[in-house]
Image (cartoon, rainbow, N blue to C red; front, side, top):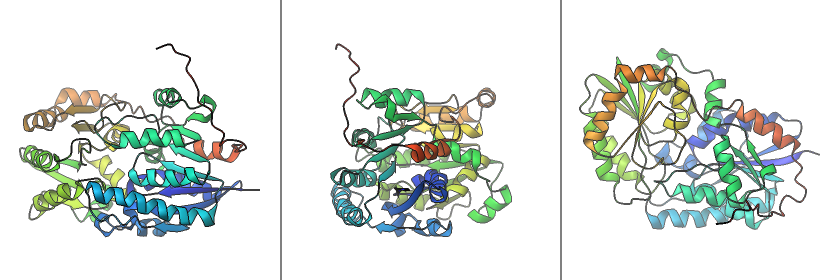
Length: 388
């Protein structure tokens, strides 16, 4: 009898990483796929990316609108509550044998809380990681404790999940899904990318992906202005901006970027690049600037540089291709100079992606097909037996 596996996607970012796994589950002779779409996929402010999933020919089982009314504390908190109610209604009818979640978003936390109450086994992807400058760090570790099966990107993250008290036999090192997608996807040519973006690249090009630092509220405006001011020091450089995540204060960042791009022929903004265009941008630009995890987990696979600003990604494993700097004008300008320096370009030739451990999607699929879910809900805390 097939296991009914439900996958939940809440954003363009996690769908891009889950895409290959979703396809694998849908074709499996051992698994039946249920797909729930929620979060920013259903928001017109973030490109209404539900259509991208439909265009892939994937059957969507249910949609759950979180009704994110604002990017403030009240709006996000109310969305979590509304999401839990929506997931409760869907789970009551769907009753999957297993649910698969990825990452560390508040939308994912809402789903996990409902799943836990329904006593449905939960598999979590990309646990054990650290992002010291974001509230997502707390969400991720909470998701680990609510989960029964863990798929992590490397052995360091596996050690951390076990340190949180999870049984080693249920913690599987499979590699990073972002790197996996790069290795398996046919990316756009330069001409195809420019046509898709309706924007021509130049001799020098950068992708800018900036998200709020959610543990330092009230900083988004000053931080964004600082980044834009530093980018203004560049000569003959084309800039491709992607929209920020649906985090607190994201609208402040988005508004400032929209003002910056408006009337600037050297810059463009795309609210939703989608996985194919996003990875194709990484292929052709000189580097990525901002504080997105993709600068650490995906960009190193292209042997291109990442300027990682601020503390949002503090604690993640980093390739030698990553340049850390502060949200200060001179610090960012210095990082830009390093990025284009001859010495750093030499370093990039031998840089490696610590998240590239092989065929992550297929590794997860094979494990799910064979997993015995009997008694998996009866979790016991794994004690490291250390005297503190």
